[in-house]
Structures are given as structure tokens and as C-alpha cells.
Amino acid sequence: MVAPLVTIMDFTRSRWGAMIAAMPDYGSYCPISLASEVVADRWTPLILRELVLGNTRFNDIARGMPGISRSLLVQRLKHLERKGVIETWPLPNGRGSEYRLTEAGRDLEAVLLALGRWAVQWMYQELDPGDIAAETLMWWLHRRVATDELPDARTVVEFDHTAPVRKRIWLVLNRHDVSVCLADPGFEVDAVVRCTTASLARVFSGERSWNQAVRAGDLDVSGRRAVVAALPRWFLWSPWAPDVRALRTGRSPAVAGGRR
Image (spheres, rainbow, N blue to C red):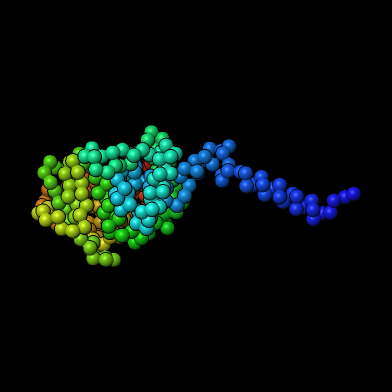
């Protein structure tokens, strides 16, 4: 006797459903699948970006990622620790801990740089300097300081963001530490940079140089002559600034990426 077609189809569906249910989320016999299980979600690459930039404490990582909830950040950090990408280290003073990249995590820096370089190459027109808040930009900037270029004495630079929201933010710099202050730190100011947030973001991204922005009137820099002259040398700018500069001069970001 021939089984009814509907019975055969139901049996097939049930076996197929059981097979699908037994499969892992991505499958494991593929390097891309294995890597995706570690980094392929909305926030994890951004957390890794913060760690690569030098933000190792929970609050510091959170400041560089406006929009992420603290509970989700905890979840993602635990995930990266389970996967062997980061480790938790106690702070020397015994108060709290910090997150450090393992050897495997440090190896991901090249992956992140390549991903950013790809975005510059193919999605540059979608990079809008108006998308970043002044606080986030200054937080990134203070982690991209060439500390060996700084003078021995403490130097205070006030950044007066004139638009889209008027906001003053201070960088307190010395060779051992760079702090970003949202309130007046109370020290004598050595230089003032007056600009829109978008204008400073264009310099940070590599779209134009500091000197070009000054000549165009987009950055107004005043203060002690030595500090004003040295300021452009104190910042390393975005890790992808060489790629943006290359693209704007008609070269390939992939070529620029080898000369950081």
C-alpha cells in the first residue's frame, strides 16, 4: 500500500526540522563561521575598537560607545573573555579591574583596521562628520595622543565646540597621562581651539589636515605660541586617517594602510 503523500511530507518535515534544530547557529566547519561566533554582532567590533585604542576600563569603554547599555556591555565583555579574546586584570591599587586584549585579541587589530579600510574604500560617502557628538570625539581624541611629543610640564588645551551644540571640553596633557574634562579642571589654559564638532571630526578622520582647517578658518587656535605651533604634532588622529587621505588623493586605502 502506498503511503498518503501528506504523511510522507509530514515525516520529511519532521526529520528536516529535527536536523535543523540539531545544527549549531552558524555551523563550525568554516573559519568565517568560527570567527563570526566571536565578533559578528552589532557591538562587539566596537568594543574591540575601544580596547585597541587603549580604553581598558569598563566606564572608559562605555564612554566611547554612546548608545550601548551597561548590561549589554557586561554581556559582550564576558562573551569575549569566554572566547579568549580578552582577560580581566585587577588594577594595581586593588580597586576594580580592567580588560586587556590577549594575544588572540591583539591579532584582531589587523582585522579591524582592514574592516575600517574597506569602509573608507567603498562607503566613504556615508561617513558623516555631523554624526558624532563632541564628547565622543574628544574621548577618541584623548586616546590618540603622541605622548612622547608632549612637553614635560602639564599642558591644558580647551576645545570650544561652537556647533551643533555649544560645549567646552578640556584636555589635560602630560607625558604620563591624558585626561578629558567635561568641567573646567581649574588649571591655567595654555591654548584654546574654537571650532564646530564637524570641523574637528574632519581633521580627526583625515579628510583634511589641521593646518588646512586653520587656513580655512574652520579651526581658530589661540594661546601660548609654542603650544599653538606644537598642537598638530601631539595627535595621532584616527587609525584610518591615512586611508581617508589616500582616497582623497586618488590612491588606494589598502596601499596607505601599510604606511602608518
